[in-house]
Image 1 (cartoon, chains in turn red, orange):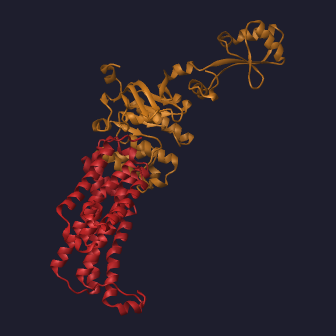
Image 2 (spheres, chains in turn brown, orange; image 1 turned 45 degrees about the horizontal axis):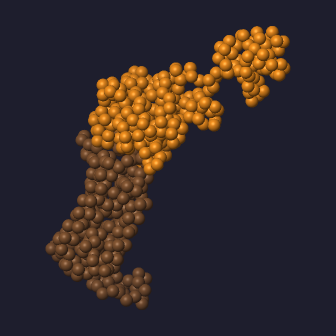
Image 3 (cartoon, chains in turn brown, red; image 1 turned 180 degrees about the horizontal axis):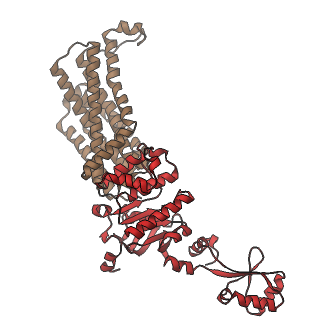
Length: 261
Length: 314
């Protein structure tokens, strides 16, 4: 077994044995579930009022109960919820080695430190991919169960593509949190960095400069901010890719060159 | 240190220095450890033991100096070297949600050990059988220490670098670990570099002892030589202590008083010939009621060397 295969085996075992996969799956499932509930309310507000799901005085926001709206909601939830959840996954995968003080055992092995870091990123990406597929599959089942109108295969494929791109961009943007977890030797510093990124992404997007701030890009792509989705240029995506690369290179360099005292 | 000498040594450091701001954690440390030796690296907490061990393992980059293990420069990327080195740094920690067996299986793979039976052998060797299926997070401190040692021994290394290996073990566990390390050194020629802050523990196992204090190696001796350097004195007591002390003073022996009121003679001619002292006191009409040579214990010797108030005057 070569180093990468061994490291991948080890990292996936550590992930599988923890509660994190279940907790993140549960957390991410809220996106299609809440979206589905919203669709049911929109579809039949009287039914929702009768069951006490909404107040009799509630004024529902404009929107229709159909597949395009539902897919739009799920994509936005992937952008916003995915950012937090994928961020937490990255922070856990790296921060746990410091929290559990097991990192020392990973620094003087025949499997290189770079191999271990790469395996961790592969596990984070795979984990995020599985969660994204789960959310999409759950959305399909819920949408069909509710009986939403407006289905087309093109719409389903297009939405899947948009969800995958949004999730992919989001995963790229959590790599700096892995770096922060390594340099900060634990959970709290990267969580602080993540919340700072969330705060700045909101403020900067509100000021209209979101296309130039990488952490605002997935939300803009998902349509959270409305029509600006069409205005994003290649530079915005390039910025996200460069941020992702910087996070990976920073983490690799930290593990390889920093003093592990 | 010549290159050839370094090649013969399993561990060879030259002027190893690490500073953190104004504080020098390790100061120009040069030591050599030969094949099959058990080197006890002794120092108080904060003396620089763990920093030295981390530099040996390529986890900390020295500011000055080099470290060679098994003839290779120790650095982060020395993957072939790490395949031959087993280590345990500070209190061992394991993945709490994995079982003992799974923890070892992770490191069997990461250490490129192709024989899957290595895990069972190691579990058996460290008496971890009853706990093999238990999650590491629920292990007692002693068993967690055994698991740490198991990870270090799993790949049958040529060199073991262990930081306080007996920490947390009960007396029976301490003896077991001592025998285990002794066996590895004696039968397999494994070189052991172990740190400790307990001299008596190190002295029972080590063939050579280095004492580090405030980052500097202040003494390095063979275990038997260390034994000879411990202070000795003659304790004398009599019914009339004042008369006995006067008789000794008249013969040129300066006597201090011990805590219990008995006299303590530190001169070598008194320590070497207690029978002369007995004759002298009998002749003076104050026969001794107690006469015996005592030796400082190892801990006192160690504390005296490092200048701790507990160790008395150096």
